[in-house]
Length: 417
Image (cartoon, rainbow, N blue to C red; front, side):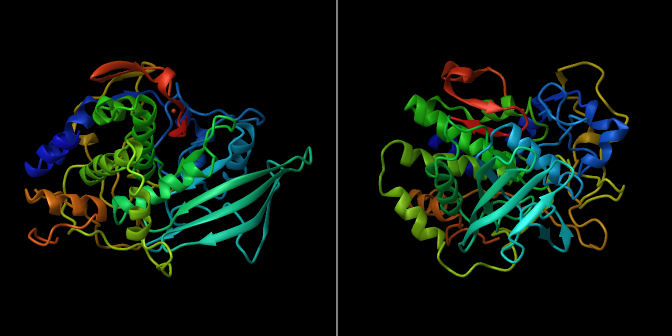
């Protein structure tokens, strides 16, 4: 895997690999998301759960929920109902409520000033019990009470606060420090229901987190990092949630994080302390997401999330027409149509005149020591320009049934080890 990364990186083939994954991905039907009564339950017009893998609410007149997106004001109650019904212990949030002046997610949990929030439509009370703020993430313990029965449950809320939309975290070290803290909490244990991973649209940042976590867990179970084929795993995950991983840089970062995470899995006990030191988690938190470490140049991406509910375009342009629903189910091969190549890039839809651009991956120096340092810190070497899942097979050296190795809950992008 390390040699594969070095070869792709030195030859600058991340964009090519990303396009291969996009063109090999399947597109499945998502008719339920387009029902008139469900349109106001989607944050973006072209990011929908597939019919065959969507999470269904059990105790509601309408069972529809777009489970991986940042909740809307009118879906916060549904969000907590889903968490209750699925017996979820952990919620992993990878975006801020407000980013670049636009709301990316409703405030669905109480602040320290409020302490409590009541959701009358689904009869839940959420209370903030504790909050621990680090430089780039915050952990909370919330109490979720079912007002119909009086039963209470503790929910762990892990909030990554400095991950820019369409971008990547500051470094693999900080990201892995966060991911391993989530796992060490025990909230993803088999005794609990599936965790909920969400960002704004539920495909870019959520896809990156879920892909890295899936690969690291599979490595641990197999005790063989070389058996994990990242591309194959991502293609399988894309059968159950559209458009996971939105940019070549998110794909590259996923490879970097999996490589670094494998060191810990294979017994390097010092690596987690190194992540903690490099992440600088005890510094004062920043007020806004940091800029990407590389200059942002336009390159092909899937512009999912291209249109908001209200009809305004998001950052970057065109969006999928609402009547373009595949006829067959569950899956068909995705058409390689230029009109669907760019689906999501307008994240500041109303008042933003500039277009945020995606960092273009550049070939790296061949110096192995500098590469090792850059993998861990996320920085370029000084010599470089600074710029929802059912059982399925993985072709990764050996055939492995994911039903035996790992369970992934449909549409949540979350792991049950």
